Image (cartoon, rainbow, N blue to C red; front, side, top):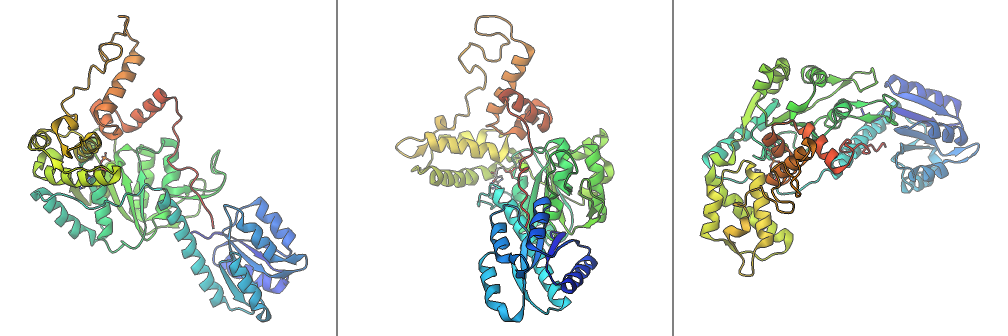
Length: 468
Ligand SMILES: Nc1ncnc2c1ncn2[C@@H]1O[C@H](COP(=O)(O)OP(=O)(O)OP(=O)(O)O)[C@@H](O)[C@H]1O
Ligand SMILES: [Mg+2]
């Protein structure tokens, strides 16, 4: 629920009490204020999702308070209550940012309608805010006409229609996220939100609050309440990306949401019901993780209702020319470069390569080639930069030899750092792929990269909450 805390600013004691009682019956947390001063005081101390405001009060006109509220980043939705004679001032309030108005005397049905509208609106604001922070490229179509891609498309069409939980597995860069988005787009929930959580990118201590939200003061730094991704995804679809990376404690909590479709925020005790369709992805073999006791079997069964496998690019080489052609056009447009096509030799190189980083690697190679392409607009093998071995990067002699430029032995830490950077380079900057090559978890790699860069890990979007 998006509206939880409400303030009623009204000087008429009877109207105030009636409204308060009604709102409490709706399980809302209500504070009342008979004057603007009292309301201002309460608004300074606490955050509210909704304010009902009478217009003329003993200590002034509430339009001033309304204007003041508009300057706050986290403000309640405002509903103005006005007598029959002052509809013009209601219009004035709407111009100044109020969400709705009620003309006195009003019925409980009218309040209910207003509340419902406010709930929906506030949910939309939050979802939009979340989506506006997602980097959204609009190239979402799955490219490829190989039999395995056609099968995949058919499966997506069939499964999308249902509410079934889907587990998408495949190597890094094969297009799992694209498949998840296709499932969403073709589902009956396509009009509702698609909310993604990258389980590998969120630090372990924040993941629970990321999933389930938290109440104000739940832990140090929890300045306001925050809804989790499951609540944001209510009526829509949630993508749990790289699900293999979550800790046993969070696995247990996730199991509960999947089974009961209910949750409690961190530091809260109210049970919140959510209606979500769940899609998860993994590039690890989850069954193996279950055997190694790293992943709960019951959770695995809950997730693996419909397994969808995305094959590696080397097993569908016939898709390479079409993918390469499409990426070439996209990057030519993006970089404003004139490119005509690939030479036969370049196409041959692309077809021969094993693509350990799959479609993402191909995409990176083509982007670089488009940038390096010469005057004649033809992409040659040398533009693909694929034959160059990753070792011997130059400056201090043998980059990965274990010796520095003056012949002394490197420390283990320095050697590790060099090796990690070489792996990142080899994988075109793709951390998931590099982690796989290095046989370490993405989280460990992420932490090591932060160490190398001297940066601090933090949640992807800690500062994203907007209320009201
Ligand atoms: N069939 C395809 N058609 C067009 N683009 C594709 C296709 N498959 C993958 N891509 C592109 O390749 C990139 C990687 O795809 P995506 O992020 O879906 O892979 P992933 O399997 O989720 O990888 P990871 O495990 O590393 O998260 C994206 O930019 C995506 O748009
Ligand atoms: Mg992915």
